[in-house]
Image (cartoon, rainbow, N blue to C red; front, side, top):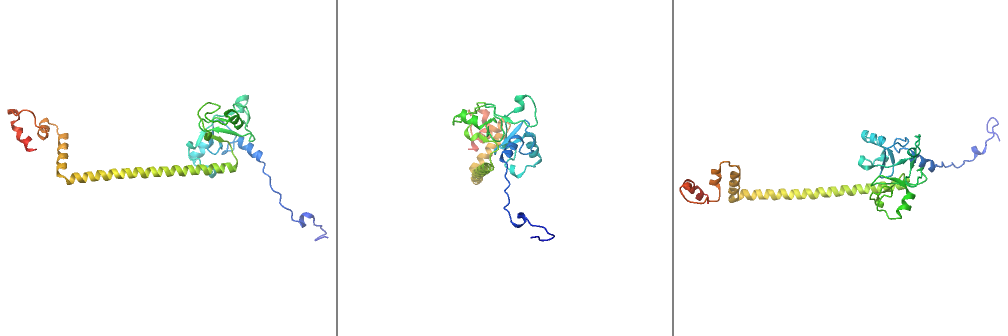
Length: 262
């Protein structure tokens, strides 16, 4: 039975066993995401910011990363503070009055703690964070305003906090489509404005060409410019198309000039 030196092989050496799959503790991951900043991995400290994908950040951490341009690729959808919303959030330490290292978010309506098991959401229009249970029970399927502050909100303004990877991928694709549509609309608007501007320039050039080719229009334009720039009233009278009233001795010297221009 021995191979060398009298050693006896065991089952582990003779039979190849199937590798055990590593089980991921999703509850622990969800709890971590519910208690710590998605960027700095530090405990939540007010003020908090939320992106369109439902990630939660400490404002100091996300602003610093934006300024230094050190955001990871997974947060590429955040280009400026316009892509974030400051959250109106209630922390447990504010209720108890005792600051702790970990202070979970609490729903102001049901007093439920955000621990990763209970789903929470934020109203993008106003920034209020509440539990999904409170939203469903109090809104009764008709979303016209925030149930916490009363500000006007729609169902499309509801952002689920820390959704699953599959849900985040769908949201990321939706944001990319909206961005492409926005850029396409801007390009179309530029083309329309550019075409209108080109038409105006062509019309102006055509009008200038007609004035240059037509001597009557050119003389009329020159007379208007001279009259507008002339200061002495006598010069304006001489070049004016209107003959002054009266034909006495006062207008003897200018009578020929008036008649000569007609």
